Length: 103
Image (cartoon, rainbow, N blue to C red):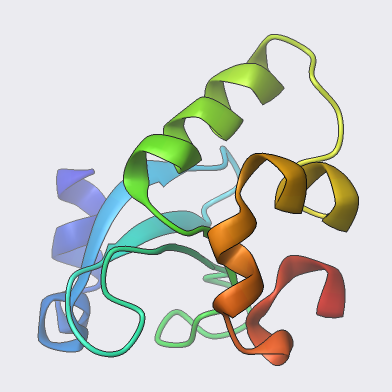
């Protein structure tokens, strides 16, 4: 994560704290400021490293659960709206254009 923090130094100014990567150069960041503070967002570095692609979870602990379950073979996260909202109903409060299934 230190690499990402050094590579994307502007993230701190945006209030983004890198918490995980997807193995393809993209990052999950904890939003620490602004109206989405506390949420975890996905940043697709190749598209725009300074723009949120989508909000992956409403909080860090839920994100970690999703991530670990996916590693164990669970299906549905992050693009299956029914599965995701059943496990993370607070995500329904996120603006629709920032939800994973809007893309």
